[in-house]
Length: 240
Image (cartoon, rainbow, N blue to C red; front, top):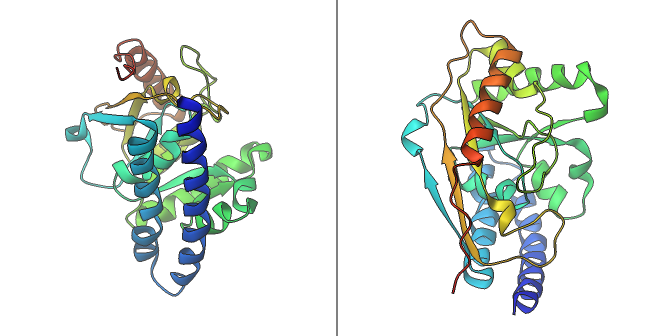
């Protein structure tokens, strides 16, 4: 049954991706905020499909911790679920992504019009400069910045190396940092075609004031909070 559901979901998601890539082109004359509101209807639709077709639901804890001003979200990275869902769950965000994603047919075309922070991850220190330069502009324009500090998806129970890009941006701009833990990888595994029904728990931590802190200090604080909370999250309980 999971295979059938996953196949149906893949077909419907592909159709949505093509449709919204074309809709995205029509938003080109409008402001970044209007483009974001229109294009992210795709994200809402995909998460709705995940709920109705795959049986993947979610619950969010800690929304009261979100500051009123634009902030930098540093989140655990386990699956493709959060890359879609977080654009629905948080205030308008500009995600930091690898530049190659913008070249993916249809998906990349729509993503490009969301004006993400696209970086060359092989550029080392130059990539940090790209994050700071573009991130500062996004924050000034009212957008939050979303960073997955591990850089790539990791399996449940594992931990990747936390990069300092998000912490660097916070230290340079003074924007607060919001750590986020979740267990989406338990129901939507990395690179897996077959998804499992269950409930994703997204847990938002208290905002961390970046004033007077270095990028390394902020990164360590985020890593400690996220990895501690990962051990406390309930399992993504399968539906009976």
